[in-house]
Image (tube, rainbow, N blue to C red):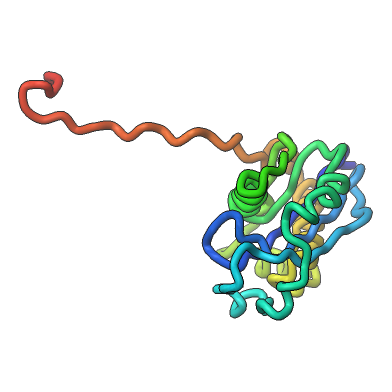
Amino acid sequence: MPSGTFVAIDFETSGRQASSACAAGLVRIREGRLEESFYTLIRPPSSRILFTWVHGLTWDMLKDAPSFPEIWPEMAAFIEGADGFVAHNAPFDRSVLYGCAEAFGCQAPAIPFHCTLKGSRRALPLQSRGLDCVCGYFGIGLDHHHALSDAKACAEIFLRLQKLGLRPEDMRLNPPGRPRPRARLLKGPDAPAR
């Protein structure tokens, strides 16, 4: 039986900036069971909503929602005590969490992210490992691009992949690193001999 406490997390965004979260869904997974969930709309920093066509959210729906710093204490309380996050395509959700935290002066927890997309690529014989395809494979209901539905589906996938023999460590993302300096191409007399 899977052990530990994880929080499946999914963000929807209004724009291309990492700080443009407009909805968040979280689901607590404890000792192999889905427990409580948390969902909120988030007022993004701009009224220009680029991705309504993806998630259906409009400025009229978001303008009276709490901002990220206003809702963060509730989200942080929900996350407290977790051993790690779980997300499908976790680099995206990690970048939104850290982007919002940095932009609004909030302290994101320093716990690892686990990626069910990475796990699905390792364990499932599918041509596409998108969230909707993996949910179809496992028979998991999904209202795609609704943050809470996506988070619940991801939590279910996390548990199913463990039943197939993957460990959380097999789905863990490397910690975010600092950008590596680009190598300079030297020409002329300063160029090293080859």
